[in-house]
Image 1 (cartoon, rainbow, N blue to C red):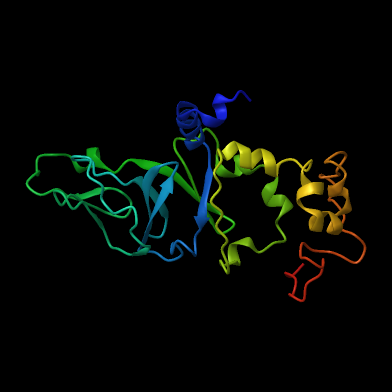
Image 2 (cartoon, rainbow, N blue to C red):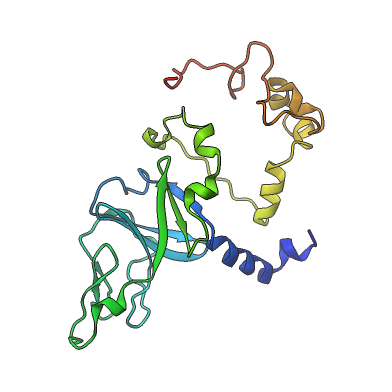
Amino acid sequence: LPREHYVDQGSFIRERNMLRGQWTCIGRLDELGLIQAGRIAVVDFYGESIIVTHDGDLHAHANVCRHRGSQILPENCPPGDMKALRCPYHSWTYSLDGSLMHAPHAEDINPADFKLTALAVESWGGWLWLAEDPKHTLLAQLGDVPERVKRYPLGELVVGLRFTYEVQANWKVIAENYNECYHCGPVHPELCRLVPAFGGGGIDIPWEDGVPHREGAWTFTMNGTSDRAPFPD
């Protein structure tokens, strides 16, 4: 791609607008506290603050009051229990599904005209997914992924450990690096000892068939084995 696609702020803004229309994985439902009804979480969606609620169903709304555009909940608001969403500016109050419940001294308005601005929200595999006016369903975008990973109990897993990396690079540099193995030989010698095919310059790797480990190794650890119990099946 031309240089400006990696360094131009305008290009980055256009990309974010494009990506908002596609399903994006936001995080684990258990970590966001969205397993039970009566819960809320504030999340970031490509620079936009979004309130996700659970009232028996999942809902997602822009964190913006319909009256004067005030932010309803702080962006750093931790996940928690909440029965309603109340704007701190003029006390407009919304139910967890985004409908307007109460607007002080505004009895002449139609509450149905002032619902919070909604986003599409879905859950799959224990993850929360958001999209802004998506063209396709989440399952259509996931394609054959659910079938390929159906033996993994993804929905039952919980977050045990998190590593965070702050990288001084445009997101496309990260994606391009991850999607090629030309660098594996010089940068990841331990990985190439575990999976010898990765050390061949990224050429003719049998991705679709499953890339074999070296003899005696069967998982991605430093020694290729593990004393952890496998998932059933």
